[in-house]
Structures are given as structure tokens and as C-alpha cells.
Length: 402
Image 1: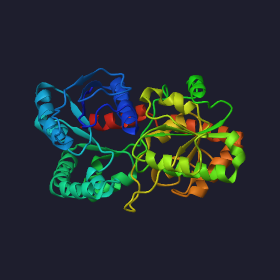
Image 2: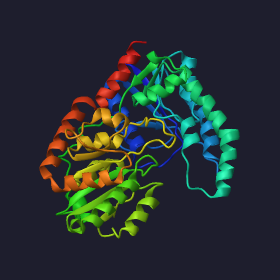
Image 3: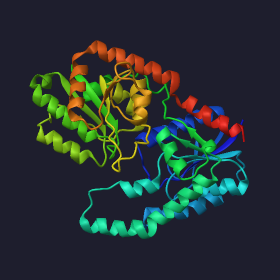
Image 4: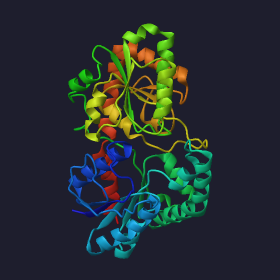
């Protein structure tokens, strides 16, 4: 069996759930069945079945995490010096170059999992900071962060034997960086069908959140800038305002937490939705399927990139929704338009169109047969094409050709 060293060096700790958590666990668990895997991480990895080796992160009070992550590379390089893998696999993050360096030193293939460009995120993702904080961040990013991340990103891309991207849009982005097309593996996200399926028991969730005898519209996520969580709350508010009778019929079940939660709460107060919206807060990754199964309809309301470029993501939640056999409402854009078909495997809506989103909610709340048909077709599609086993098979096939 191929010996693979999997590196997780991202300087975020204590993550309980989210797309990155699901992706990491999915790849590791599937890869462990097909290769001799050794996982080195700086933190506990939720939902991972494989035993992992934790190399303690560098933690210095008040020191910026970017600098700590940068110096952590040398600790990983030192630790891995005597390991003898056949290949190295690493999930890209802006200040980590250790995987590429170790692979070059050992003259073995380096596989880079590239889910997004940190250079692009630095330039395009904005937070609601104060003016003073924004000025400080602009100076810090321009003088320190952006030059270093740009250099490390280029180093990783240039030294990778293979680069795994989740979409054709992301492939197009890195082709513009001058990456050889033959190195790129387009590999959408996937699911573990044993963990995400309609047989998962969810009675305790329904009882705890008083969801019984209601049509439950669900969303799960980290409420990121691209998730459109606030649009879901706004559309639900408009639905109940136009059709007050739905207050006794439907509930919005929002699972998770994150930076856009304040916008969600704003609409809940504005429309007086306190009795009809449940906010669970963050839940452990392993409970995700149970919470999703308590829903009748699941929404992926992804919004376009702020700079007008094509959305390059592959939402993990979308595949999990499909695996649960639920009716899915989804933004009709980018990869989602390729995976799903309106009226067959999902109800597709224009991204950011609140009226269309509210109409989709109403039609699916009213039509149980449509919910059942869409849900069954979506599950068949995801099991046939988008599992973590199939995802990993592509990667291992590439490595075996080296």
C-alpha cells in the first residue's frame, strides 16, 4: 500500500464543525481505507476515525497567529525528518509551506489540496471592523501578510506534483497563475453515505427544539460571507408576512453560528420571527446528520463572490443535504448548477433573489410529493457520483502514476 503523510497545519483550533471539518474527516477516513496513512496535525480533528499524531502548535500570548503558523513550519519539518512516506498530502493554508518543502527534500510527490486562494481572500473578504482597525489591518496586510502569503502560495503551487481543486472555476483561477493543467485534479466534495443517510434517528432533536408537526426548513453552516444565511432569514420573514397562516405550519431551523449571525438576528427581530425560527448555535460535526434529518427542506443559498468573479467553491453542506434524501433549495450558480437539475434533484433559485427563495420555500412547504421526489433523486445522484471514496480514488490513482 502507498504510504501517505497527511499534514494539517492550519492555525485554527477547537473547530467543532463546518465544511472544512467535514472535508478533512471525509478525505482522511476514505484515504485510510485505501492507503497506509500517517496523519500529523496541530489539533484534534473531529469526526476522524484514524488515530492522529499531534505535534503541539507554537503558542505565544499576544503573538499574531500568522507568525506562529509561519514558524510552526520548522517544527513540522523537524518532526517529519525521519519519516519515510511515498507521498505527502496537505490541505493548503496561507502560511504553510512545510509539505512542499519536506516532499522536495525527500524527492517524493507533494499533493496540495487547494480549496481557495488565500491571496484572493485577503484582497476580497471584508469584515465590519471599526475605521481604526480597518486602517491597521490594511497596513498589516499590505506590508506583511499579502507579500508572504503570495510567495508561499506560489511556492506550494509550483512544487506540487498534483493540485486537488474542488471546481472547474478554481482550476481556471490557478491556470491563470501559470500552473500546468496536467497537475490539476478537479474533485468536488463528497459524503460518507454511512454517516449521512435518511435512517439517522432524530426524534430527540425534534423534541428538544419543538419541531414536531411542523414543516422544517433547515440550514447548516458556519454562517460565512458566502453562505447567504441572512438571505434565508429575510426570505422566510417575507414568506410569513405574505402568508401569516404559515406561522402554524413552518419553522426555520438554522444550525451553526458565525460572522453573519448578527444579520440573521436582525431579520428575525425585524419580522418578529422569534417563535418561528430556531437558532441552535454550533453543534459537533458528528451530530450534523441527526440535525439535518429533523428537517423537511434544506437550503444552500450561496451568494456570488464580491469581486464579480465566478464562485469557485464546492459546498460540503450541499452533498450532505443530498445524502439525507431531503428536498434541496439551491442557488443556481457555478458548480451547483452542474451537480443539480431544477425540478429533478433540487429547486434552483437565482442567487440573492429573495422573492424566488421565498417562493421556493412556499412551494415545497405546500407539496409533500415534490419534496419526496426531489429528495430521493438527490440521494441517488450523490451516492452514484459524489462520495469521499470516489474522491480519494482519483487522488490515489494520480499518485500511483508517479
